[in-house]
Length: 133
Image 1 (cartoon, one colour):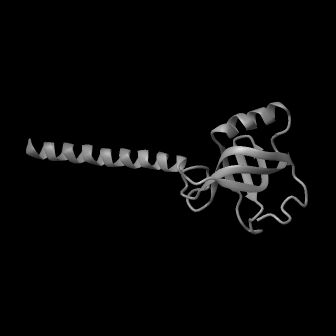
Image 2 (cartoon, helix red, strand yellow):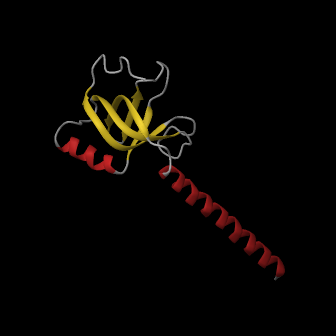
């Protein structure tokens, strides 16, 4: 009976540690610092990609997830025909970046963008990123 109590206690303790880790993980995404980013954005069925103006030619694009105010802003742009799948757009937005693999299909190490607010959206042009960091 004593061995069962120890095993049960060990399982409950392990579960508590895992759940606490998950709660910390979710809170940390909300607390990531937000800054302005500019670059090119393309979306399609089930995917959204961003290439910042500061990206090197071989860098992989960043996964995009709309959060907070940007969800309604993106929905409004789609409804107005200003954001259509498969079209490249120049965007400026306030967003947080995570590289831990919590968001997006590319896994740890590849940046994923948590967009908070859409500041500018227009069709992409050749000189969009000239003189942009």
